[in-house]
Amino acid sequence: MLGARSSRAGGERFQPRATYVLLGIIVSVYVAQFLSGGALTQWAAYWPPLTVLEPWRMMTAVFVHSDSSIFHVLFNGYSLYILGTLLERLIGPGRFVALFLLSGFGGSLAVLWLAPSTAVVGASGAIFGLFGALFVIQRSFGGANRQLVIVLALNLAMGFIVPGISWQAHVGGVVTGALVAWILVRTRQGDRSRARRTQLVLVGAGLVAATVLGVLL
Image 1: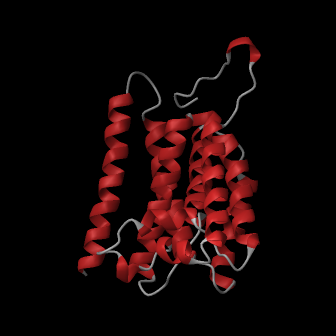
Image 2 (image 1 turned 30 degrees about the vertical axis):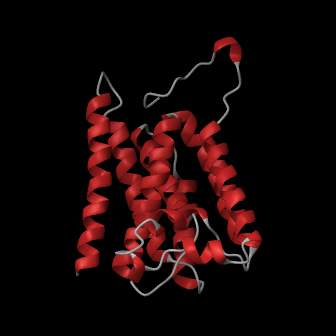
Image 3 (image 1 turned 90 degrees about the vertical axis):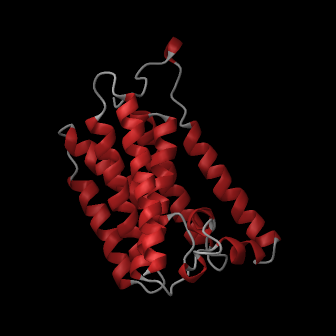
């Protein structure tokens, strides 16, 4: 489905290696946050006023988590494992990584536009992008997604109710993830890999352009 290989030689069990790599990075970074005494968190967290001088924070913030509560990284890590295992099998490791990174970027962009004085950390924007992508893919193939809608709605609602949660990053992530999945679905048939790559590059370019515009305004 969506260009990923559906069979494995000799009945080999599918291993979501890209998901494991992303999880490994997040766990390693979390350990490094403690070893650095919080210095790494300060360096990598995203704070919109620093976008001009330190734009990398829009992406590095995806891989750092709150060093005051282990539940933040545990929840995001568990969600990444569950959703990553499903999606990587459907779309392949390369497209999955692109989906994760673009969704994380989209989450940071939404913070820049909607909460320009708020500092954020965590992979939540990227995770919500995976939710949005799974919804689009299931809907495109006629799958039952009522439970997914309920889970997504509840998690989005928490961002508006619970203090300290960036609903802006969640919304930006889910919109970006849904857009990426829509492109993957549209370009899944025939030899449309070039069109797929072009459209995904355009999504990335659009995020960059929106970032520049957000900084200028």
